[in-house]
Amino acid sequence: MKLIDLANSIYYNDLLESSDTSVTKILYWLASDNNIGTLNDFIATEYVIVGNEAVPELSNEAAGIYGIYYLLKYYERMAKTSLNASALDVIEVKEADTTVRLVNRNEIAKTYKGFANDTRDYLNKLVESYKKFHCIPASIHSNFFAEITKIIQQP
Image (tube, rainbow, N blue to C red; front, side, top):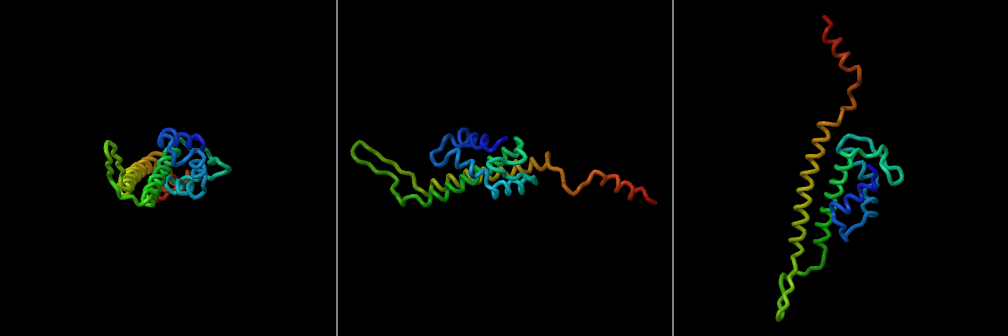
């Protein structure tokens, strides 16, 4: 999957066109060497960034994991950002027939932190599943079992 397609999917499907970010910002994050390196560490792959693309192209499974990793970092950032917001602690203001209710910034941060925790758990399950079904250890060579069989069969 191309990184631009993944960025579009995250922006339009997962974040529902949030005003806090854009497809360009998401693509920039996805095309970062540090972030693709973390994906490589998670799933034991060797993706590199060339221009704004991953080489080799991301498999659907790897793209799914990478997208969830982006969401985890997004929710963590939003939790921190909400704590830095204006220090309004007013919960409700009433005047005549008008009522204005503001949500406490700490509650917003807790909500984003909850999203981040749920996303982290999901990410861990995806990585575990990927490793279980897709990952072949790099240290096992094609003649490994033949050599072991020869050693076992020796008197």
